[in-house]
Picture 1 (cartoon, helix red, strand yellow):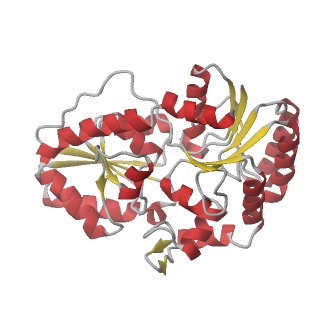
Picture 2 (cartoon, helix red, strand yellow):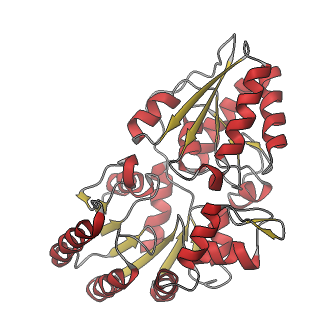
Length: 362
């Protein structure tokens, strides 16, 4: 099949493309590399700042459109699959719909269904937008609500979701926000991870436990990184001889990986039920995820044996307590590392995931 993957989210499309190519498909990835993360792509659609940057990107996309015809599948990472305003994206989507066979929308990243349902329907006990029945009032959360609810972006999302042939969610959280609206065409497919070529040694540092945390630019409070970092720093102060803390902030993907390598555990996404791409990549290397590992995560994967993730509730106390227990009980580490690698191999291997997408496309 000829497949066009438009847009990027945490290396999903770049990794999926590798898997699909291995299966013999012709795949083109066109994206902005997910901003500063700079993930690989075949066609660079990054935008320079300002109105002129938007005009140049629009002109580049329009010039590309004749080449974006005749694909068996066009897959969008998000309704905002280009760094353009919704009113400019809509005619581009309609062109793609007219001149290609199947249109697939990914429920990944921020969109109307995620914002709306977590704010009003609240299918999750906690999320980026609610803690129980209470709606979060963080500046970042409010900004996303204003950006998506009752706006052109929201209407674009609803139009594409209704019009597309299939919808794919890579996380349990996104699946439960789309499935009630599009029961027949919403599918859960795990995120794709390319396993390391060499097996990671399942050992930890004998003198201290090495903890890694990645900090997203301007999204620390929204993702709960501020709380996780504060808890980690407090545990470090309490056990300076038993713990090491490594921080990565706003750096390209390759540099991020180098800093992460060799860590024993990663702190990631306080308000998540499930591990996303970065913690999954870490787990594939035998790095323990301290973050989202709720029962629903294992259930949707039909996983009844492995429990590699140290699940935390969205509070400072939960993160501090779980991290402290890991630091003072390092005998758990090797088994959690082993399970982490097996978990990713079992559910997220990029070839296995690509086969699930392939079946969806046929």
